[in-house]
Image 1 (tube, rainbow, N blue to C red):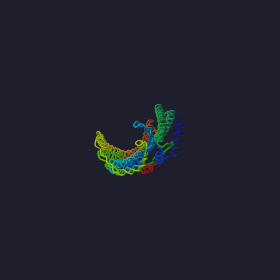
Image 2 (tube, rainbow, N blue to C red; image 1 turned 90 degrees about the vertical axis):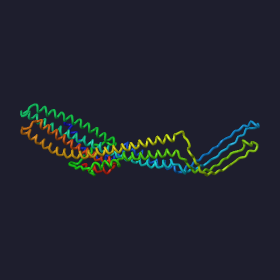
Image 3 (tube, rainbow, N blue to C red; image 1 turned 180 degrees about the vertical axis):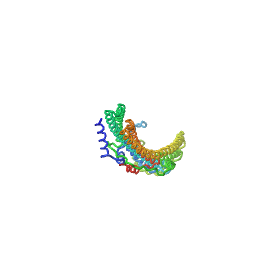
Image 4 (spheres, rainbow, N blue to C red; image 1 turned 30 degrees about the vertical axis):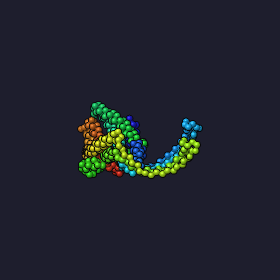
Length: 438
């Protein structure tokens, strides 16, 4: 067991020597994370909606050609078989003059590009939160292991002291058994903490693709700032308009509205400018077999083509009703996104404020627990405290240390979630948290 303790302590010291910080881990995740890579590809695909929509407003040019072999065997009047070849080609240009659905589709392309950009920002923001969560999970696990190791060492020392005191008859065997129980319990806690740290490190490596030996911790006595502005309603209002989920839902409503307009345009006429140039080569052998004439004709045609939809079996009206229902759904999704973002902002704000209060309380408790442990040790030495009092004081001290560290991590995460709720979380916020690390 002593070897295990030494190995754990050495590992924790090595962590401090070659530790990575939050900003470095975040950069690694930006380059490695699969969900961000997928979002980047989706962004590139979404940006193609704009040129696709623009194409419906631009002319289209097509080239066609044909060649046909004709083999004819006349019955009346009876005669020999006739075979000849006819062929031709044509280039046609079509320029839409009035196709309202194409114009609406072009405007939809602009909205779809904006939506793809918001969705990419949302995935990147989510990655920042996941990285910060995984990072602080590792720090928490490191603190738990360090506290469990220190507690085990303290309990082991207390066990040795109890044994010596029992040998000289100043304590009972009960004191030895209590010290042995605490030492065994802290040993089990230390093993569990080491296992949990390995799990948390692996979870972080899934995001970064690297095995991180250790991470930088918060500086001792670091001061955490309060949210600015300092009232919850300001953050709620900001989240209802700036939250990325809300922005995506707003674009979804606009896109659904334009889809209704595009399908309604199916009732409108279309007007196109059509121009073509072609050549046809044929023969009159089928009609004048004795004196066939070969024709080689060039043709140029320019005109305006109008198409008026009269009846399509009710399909257009059905599609309009369908898209109107989907527009209503998009509106409901927007309402839900606003309510969810407002709730998220409230939770994050309260998480920050209550976290700051907890940090302050645990800092005071840490001072009290340290003083209590010193007093109990002194009382044990002079015989006014028993062994169990010292053991309880040690447990309370290390438990307070863990709770204080976790409260600080949770408060920092709540600050990042608050920025995310308002839609303003970015790389600068990661740098600001990174500046608090040792």
